[in-house]
Image (cartoon, rainbow, N blue to C red):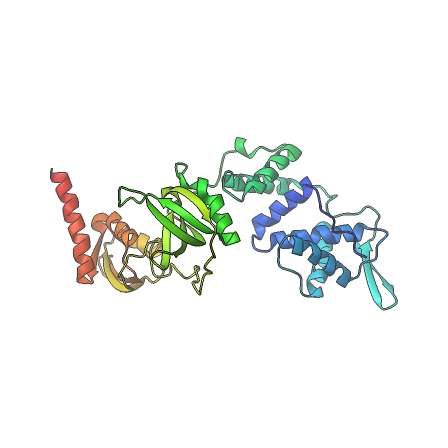
Length: 361
């Protein structure tokens, strides 16, 4: 009988080790940590008998509760046992009873969470806490705030008093974050939303009935993508332009085949102008700006047509022309020029001419 997977309380040393692992391996840390918690409790149970399959079953019970990926092979558990001995210095012994092999700690009271952090681990932990403190106030990261608070108390650390060594782009003035949690919840629960939306382009608010599918961040703003009932197509709404929002009791239209991981492959930014098609655009970049554009391409489709003797270059990108692309090109000023196609070249040229006129008046 498996009794070792009861709900666990906050363990500061466990949280510290989890954060250190998070810093080193973001992808599989939480799953592996949950397994370590359960296996550790089973091995500490002097009254129980746990084979590899028993340990796997115990882990999967907890992983299922946490809605995480289950263990499908006993090899994973065997590797966990080896890693626990290697990384934490504990000794695990096996005992053969009949055809079964059971595992436990060699010493009574032994646990991977009874060891102390080394000086270099404390330093790394402090750096990690500084990094994670950047998530404070971001929805769905409240658990990081709790861990940071408790670890600060346990290990006498205060990331706020440390000089930061990492900085992120952020916009503290964005209003739309107040709707983030409800939008996220509606996506997960598949709830239809009725949204009152104030566009920059029209003076009066507009009403949308949206079947929400996806949240995307671009240029320090959050955007909701979903099925717009009235137009029967995917719409993109900036969260900071939402005025009001409420749930609507009606059938939810499932996302039918739109892979949002690839949805933005053909654009810069998030907007898809009506009637626009994928276009190959040729650009000239002068010798001052070319090193930057070469190291940080405008788009993943960027290809070099020619690198000239004077250090300038001609490049091509295959994108759907939109406002964000125009802004990126105009931001280059005299260092970039559109070569083709002619309609897009004229559009950028006219905007530059108008900009010059603004300075003449």
